[in-house]
Amino acid sequence: MTQKRMFEMTQKRMFEMTQKRMFEMTQKRMFEMTQKRMFEMTQKRMFEMTQKRMLEMTQKRMFEMTQNEDV
Image (cartoon, rainbow, N blue to C red; front, side):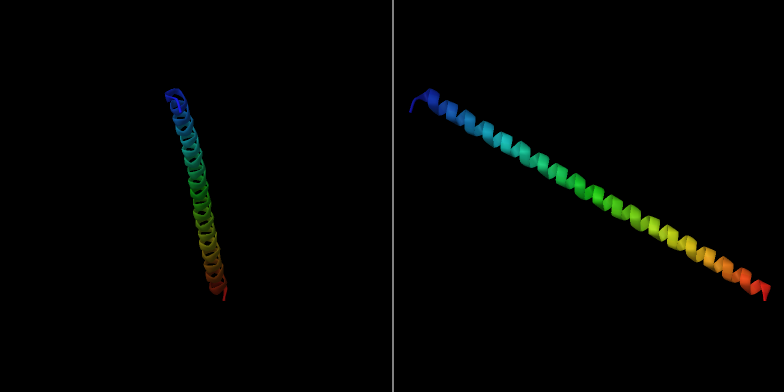
């Protein structure tokens, strides 16, 4: 095998490996971003549900207190 041929094959292999690595990193980053987004949305939903529940309980307590005063 000639030096030129060996060099070309090495270059080609290096290029393919680099492309593969870049692709894997991009996939990994996309996956991590998706995971992060899902986590944030879950946190947000949980927070909103908690706020809603607290509000409902407060309103219920106020209503019950108002009812008791009428008696």
